[in-house]
Amino acid sequence: DAGITQSPRHKVTETGTPVTLRCHQTENHRYMYWYRQDPGHGLRLIHYSYGVKDTDKGEVSDGYSVSRSKTEDFLLTLESATSSQTSVYFCAIMGQGPNTEAFFGQGTRLTVV
Amino acid sequence: AQKVTQAQTEISVVEKEDVTLDCVYETRDTTYYLFWYKQPPSGELVFLIRRNSFDEQNEISGRYSWNFQKSTSSFNFTITASQVVDSAVYFCALSEASGGSYIPTFGRGTSLIVHP
Image (cartoon, rainbow over all chains, first blue to last red; front, side):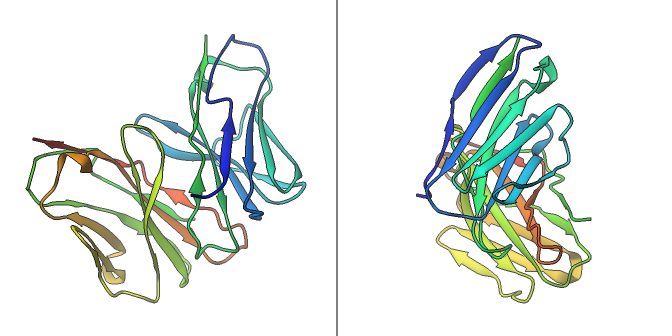
């Protein structure tokens, strides 16, 4: 199994509070992604990174920011959590290019109350 | 822009039936990659298969088979003699080779329920 871990696995937070989710990999992969999974929407890309300090927005980036200061860590921050951000968040890593499959973390279930 | 459509939201079958999950994609690239992932009730995402745009050969792996047809932009997945353990959400995904960002785009998933 690919070495990718997400923390925390579960979190309940209050509306308006900041939240940071962490993705850690031991594969030295260049590409890292944050997706959210919601019923009826499948997996939607929030942000992605193609190297240290190189990040870009995805389809549903509003309300989220990311940082990647080291190859192995990709952080997703909800600046001020809202109930619409209640979701399951998945981190994924990918090797050298599009011909390699993405490996996923176990997911973080975030509930904003 | 790349797009993946899984029109079947949910499929319900009885064990031992064959079932086909449809995947239709859109891309302007001539080089691209298609994937299928399985998400069992436990929630993790498991890679099943990768296919590149230059290889239209169908693939069979045990009870699983994949039919890639560029003419119809489809990459369908068939499970033969389904089993209860096949119950899961299945996602089709596409990555384009151009642009350098290599972003996998996923369909909305098909929930397969196999009844005993």
